[in-house]
Image (tube, rainbow, N blue to C red; front, side):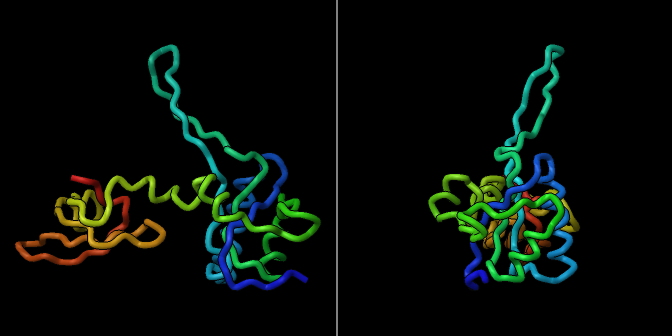
Length: 177
């Protein structure tokens, strides 16, 4: 019996070598199908992107897994969520003593850069002037008013036909002016 916890924490799941992306994909499908995104909120295979210049002068981008055979899962640990994750093909178990999963500490999460990954991708912050580059509002400019907790949505006060209008957009549709 796993001690039920109501706090979302990051756990490390061990997988067979080469199964990291399969485990991530399968777990995301199960989360969606069962509607348990409130219990298992994020699944990541930490990667590092590097660019190399080939002999011909072309730039080649490649991805390398930072922790081969491991997947990070942000979840509320219950018997049910433990069972869901543990029974995915390719999962050998959670990292922790015996069969007891141990969440990453806040300092470990910070050191791994797990929580900041998405924020690091944004080239703007609240108060910055931005240009909308995608969607039906493309071409308009505005000021960032709010950024969602997951850094996917951004509220921009856009100047539309002379009026300031708050617009919620995907972060990918915005660039700093």
